[in-house]
Image (cartoon, rainbow, N blue to C red):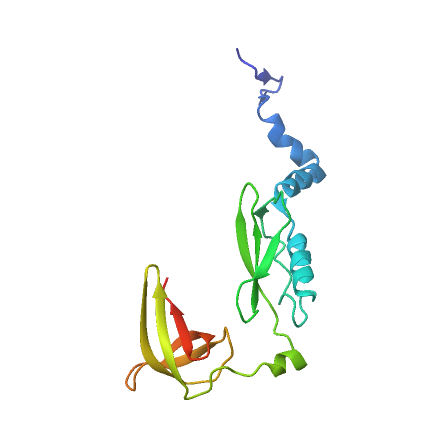
Length: 181
């Protein structure tokens, strides 16, 4: 059974092509169809602002608004937002819906008395245990802090006098971690 229609001028129109051409006639319908299948980046911005208590672009809030070109699957449940780092420098936003996804949003450094009151837990010259952690293994060695830092900060450390400096994250006083993979 042939369902194509031949017109007088030689053009052939298939019924299967019609659904593809309709959005061209009504751009508003195309936008609505596209919006139904993705999470609006403004929704992500609102969730991050509610979680951090500060709007995008301000200290304590997201460094910048989400990219409007972001195309993440629509989320049936409310977005889950949590701190991604102990230093509270980024948040994780995730959707547990039918098509799960997770993104990380950088947070602008907070300023004021609360930020200034946090003293460094490691000072330059302090002895550290430097741990390299990977899947199913960890290796540790004595080292020295080459700069000061607080919990969650990345600092430069050295594991021996002749060794090259490495970047490690302070996990607690006296312990710096280098994640491997």
